[in-house]
Image 1 (cartoon, rainbow, N blue to C red):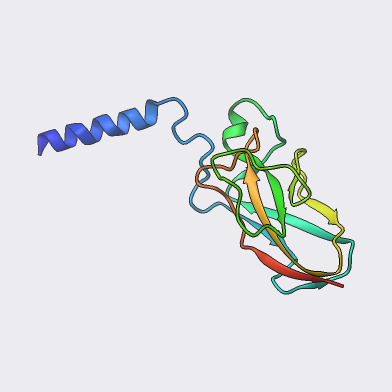
Image 2 (image 1 turned 180 degrees about the vertical axis):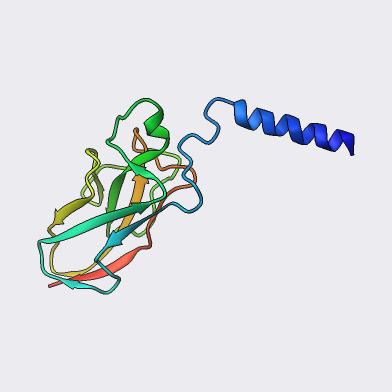
Length: 143
């Protein structure tokens, strides 16, 4: 019994004192989501899309210091069938839109038709947090 307690105590001390322990790790209740845009919505282009976050913060890309461990910035995935590699920086192209200045909304222009949207939060180097903060994927119809 005494050995079990010692091992548990050592493990706890190492977890708490190891540099980076918990860095970039949002709490379990953190989430990202769309505000006012539901799955199945019909919109006219261009349209405003708003990004919500709870339980974690928003900060611009490249932020340094302690704040970078408690916040990130939004990336909007448009018509992406498969999530990017979550161990690498999020790609930057017309389907992976970066909001580097900590923007929480955008005016989006899409061709008429069916589109999917999903949010993925990235850290100061555009890498997803661990565990990643990903919204539900929604489908919209642009008229």
